[in-house]
Length: 201
Length: 201
Image (cartoon, rainbow over the protein chains, first blue to last red):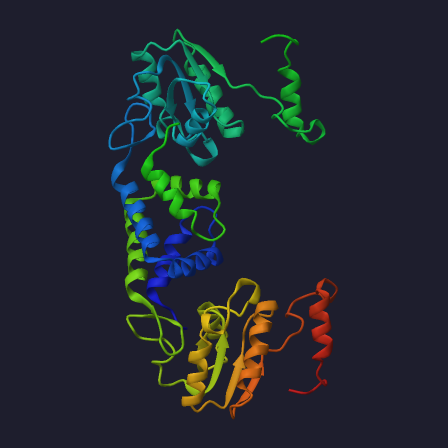
C-alpha cells in the first residue's frame, strides 16, 4: 500500500476537527496540497498565533488575546449585570445583538451528570467568588435551552438564592419568523406557559 | 463588536478548506483553541512538512515525498501498462484493490470546456511524451464516470489512436451490492449495453 507519511499525518490532524471523518479529512488534505504557499503560511501562522496569544481570562473565563480580556478590561461596561453563558461564542452572540452592555461569565461547559461533568469541572467556583466580591444587581442565566443547559441553570439558580441578587433566565418561546405549526411541542408548551398580556412591555 | 484577531484569522484560513462555511469554521476554531498543545504542534508540523516535502513527480504527476515518486521509483512495477487517472487519490484507490501493478499517469484534473480547462492545463502533454518514449502495451483510461471524466477519456482515446498501444476504459455497470431498482437510469442503460455472456470471464 502506497502511503505518503506527511499526507497521512496531515489527515490524522484534520480528523481531530469536529465533524471531520476520514473522507472529508482526505479531501481537505489534498486541497491543502494544492493551496498557494502564502495561504498555507497564513494557516500555520494563525495556528501558531492562536496557540501562543490566546488564553482564558482568570476572572470571567472568556478567551483573551495578549492577556487583555475583551470584557473585564472594558471599563465602560455596566458592572452591575452579569450574563452567564456556557461558551465564549455564546457571549459573542450577545455582543452581536448590541442590546447588552454588562459583563459575562463563561462557564466553559454545562453540568452533565451523564458525562461526569460536575460543579468543579466548569467555572462555577469562580462565578460564586465574583458574585461575593462584586456588586452585581442581576445575574442573567443564558445557558443553552437543552437538557444540560437547563440542568446548569436550575442548579445555579438554587446556588444563587443566598446572594442578594436578582437571578433571571432568558425567555422561552417561538423563535421569530417561525411558523406555529412547525414549532416542536415543547417550544409551543413553553410559549403558552410564558404568554404575556398584550401591550405589556 | 468584540473580535479576537487571532481567532478571526484562524477562521478565515479554515474557511479555505472544502465544504467549510462560516459556522463550521467557527466551530473548528474553537475546538482548536481547546486542543492539547501537542496536537496543535502536530497539526502545524504536518502542514509545514506537507509544504516542504511534497512535490509532484515530473514524470507521472503523482505527489511524491522527498523527490521519490512512489510509482516511478518502484522498479518492480510492470512498465508495460499505464492507468490514467484524474487525481492522485484515484491512483491510491487502485492501489487499495491490489489487482494492478503497473504505472500511473495523474492528469491533475479533467478537461472541462465550461470551466476553461484545456489540454495544456492538465498533464496531457507529459502523457503523450511518456507514451512516445516508453514501451507501453496498454493504456487504461480511468477518469471519473461523469461528464468531465468522459470528455477527457473520449479526447484521450482519439489522441492515442496514432500510437501502437491498446487503449481501454474501465467498465460501466451496476455497482456491487446495489439494488437494481435503486440504480439510476444511465447506469442501468450502461449495464445493459455492456452485458456479458454468462460464463465469460
